[in-house]
Image 1 (cartoon, one colour):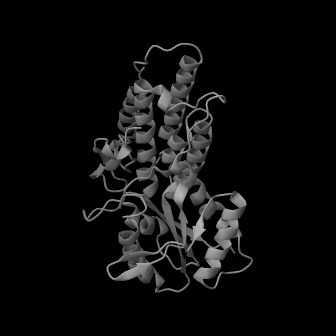
Image 2 (image 1 turned 90 degrees about the horizontal axis):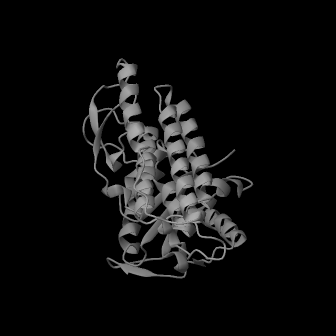
Length: 317
């Protein structure tokens, strides 16, 4: 898979300002600008969509592989067309909810035809927040939508170049395990099941760790808890959980007071420096009791660092 991050940066219009910002991931996704000509925007987006759907030069293959390639290309074009339709200038919460449903449905559909690592990278594809340019920030849903579109476009190129590396194999040909698939499973536990693991509000980080360990055991994910120690800059760091099969370390934090965001930020920055020499993948889960003002921006602050994934988990109830 061609890394999405190396795709060319293109210009997109930012909502509410009419200005132009550089969009990472070569998104080619025109954002709605109030007051601009809707017809002109539709023509531009329509041209981009038709270009994305142009036929690819598929290698000569026989039998089921050719059918699989055709099915995959048709699915990708369908998902691109639906994504194009949902990126409107309606209220951001409306667009965000539609996008989340689209992302989930697309992930499920891809899982039927492509290998697990590709689905995992699609699940994790996110845009990068605009920084320090003095303009109003682009809403995250448009950045994430652009990243998802760029990923699907890159997948089409990969199907052209090496379909066997992308498509699922018949049941008789087992798919080799890949660390990213397991990491996605860990993140899904954090986001979807951890909030329901507590009867009340967790009081300490140890409570959060205990709750998550129960989920790991139930999911049959091989892990070790507080078993590794890393010396960095005269201090010893011990990850909460490590996953040798996934080449990953996991740290859990509890944000339970108004001033904890700054403290957690400092801790995470130090832990990234300590862990990255030993673990290619570092995952942080911040269990928030309602004190992190902007979870998306908080996550993106760290996810610009290579190999780092962070999720803010909101307490339910």
